[in-house]
Image: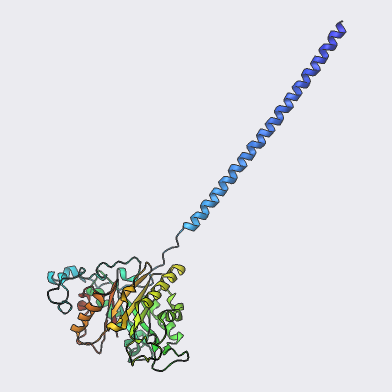
Amino acid sequence: MKKLILLAFAMLLTLFLGACSDSSTGDGQNKEKENAAAQDGTTEKVNEQEETKASEEEKEVENKEEPEPEEPFTALEPAEGAQSIQESWSEEELANMPEAQAYGDEIERMVPAGETLVKDGEDLTDGPLKNHRLVAYYGHPNSSNMGILGEMEPDAFMAKLKEQTQAYSDADPDRPAIPMIELITTVAQRSPATDGKYYHMTPSDKIDEYAKLAEEHGALLMLDVQLGTDSVLNQVKLIEKWLKLPHVHLAIDTEFSVEEGEIPGTVLGQVNGSEVQEAVDYLTVMVEEHNLPDKIVLVHQFMDEALTNKEAIQPTENVEVVLNFDGWGPASPKISNYRRFVRNETSQYGGFKIFYKKDEPILTPEEVIALDPSPAVVNYQ
């Protein structure tokens, strides 16, 4: 009997130890599973964090703006003691436009004295005209008949240009002036060139020379196109490699644009404002794509017929627009026509040309600045 009891106890002990062993094994397996799951969870979290970080870095790169390009010019500082027009002009001068610009009883300015934007005009760019005035010398290096640029050697030319520019900085110290070279880049011809377009391209090495000259002196370069029978946009593309330089801008001589079968210089040419706007839009894209400083498009006009559909010409966030009155002769008619063509018809800025040999008399910087609006660009021929 005692043996049976011992045998039964041994069997129970064996069963108990087996159960404990199974329980221990199960607990170990569960713990291993739990540890594995925990490890998997940690890995997933690490992966998620890495993915989030990478995504944030990508977004940061995408959202990071390119640095603004530096100003490619040096404005001439006013002379010591130069007085603001608000201090140096009389109350009457501050309130009224020049007599030659007034019609009848309408003598009050449309914009404050010295303001260069036309009434209701705005400038959304960071361009040179926002806080400065440009003083340009116009012409072609191979012709003394086309402007002062062709009358002087480059160094003497720049010295005289800076002297004239300084006079405007001193006359209006609140708007320091920048020297600018206006180089005729395509010259209208009375006989067709090889492509039949009635213009001749200024040699590339000459354009390069004046681009370098302007850069060395902190000046701007404006490339002037005379079109012939070519389109505005095609001429812009001809000079595109220079327009991609930070300090280079565009001018359009409207009176030399003629139709097929017409000869420049024998008939008054004409440009539609929609063609000008194509150039404005083209340069707008160029500025954005190449992160360039904002550009200027200047349009010359001296007769009604030379520029039609002017309301189509509008500035953009990357391009400033100037309508430049281009006539020569007695001062009073010139001032009156500036009112007619620029004050009443442009969308943003006005320009005024002075002819050293044809104007009677030659207006002083103070007289030019007094116009309403004050010209943002003054070019000399």
